[in-house]
Length: 339
Image 1 (cartoon, rainbow, N blue to C red):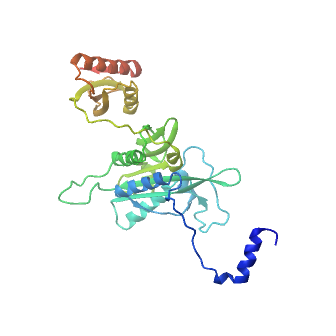
Image 2 (tube, rainbow, N blue to C red):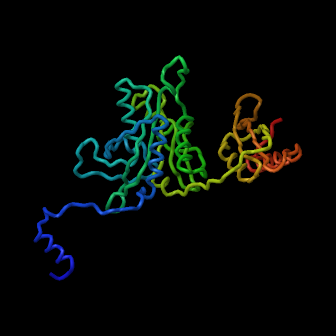
Image 3 (spheres, helix red, strand yellow):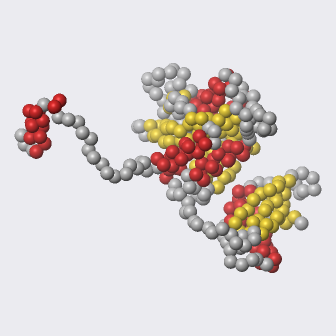
């Protein structure tokens, strides 16, 4: 017997371990989630609220399927003793499992599907695989079940975009931008990526025609995948209290001719970057391409919403703000004002 614990052990052995009652230590503190767990739960509950069902798939996949969802150079991790010879590789994305789940549902006659998965993915690092957490979701079919109350319209790009934006909003993120994505697994005309600063948070859009044909899908499939690790690490946007407005809002509509390669996201970011305190929103309400327009140009119509906070604005003051915005778009994007 050299230390205090040795003496305690001897006493316990002498009395008999089976005769010592089991009691849990008392704890008066409040429980708490591990760092990031609240945001993880928020992302999951958001998708459930939007009607998505959670699925869990194997972490090992068919190599030929997984490679379709690689972004750039990806180092894969291969199992030496795989349970399934056809699936020897650890997944680098959750999308292969989701697409296979969609295919199984189609085989059973299900056509209106919303699924999501939250789980780990793997890449081969130096000696050990590198694990990272992703969240992915997919939808296809009718927006609403067949009913006399609803039109039988199909889901589209904006349904998946809305789900992505709802997750980010509910997780407290506002400072992000959406740009065109070059991901090969997405349809080139309906592909987008979410960026926070210069970091890519994820990709979403319509499944590429090549993959749709490979799985023999007869309707459009929309998918999204976000980096949960990055989502958990980002600070929430500052929440500011704004009193209810007491003055009348002012709406102005303006139309521009812009080069086709200029996206609305760039325009919105540039206008909001002017930090005009009276300007509360900028919305795109019309796009026109066709006759009577110069080649390589399209017409974008914007609604500018001004909300004065101290005193009503005169027409001259509003015109000055309009001119400031117009001047920015003309100098930055080679825009031409349409009258």
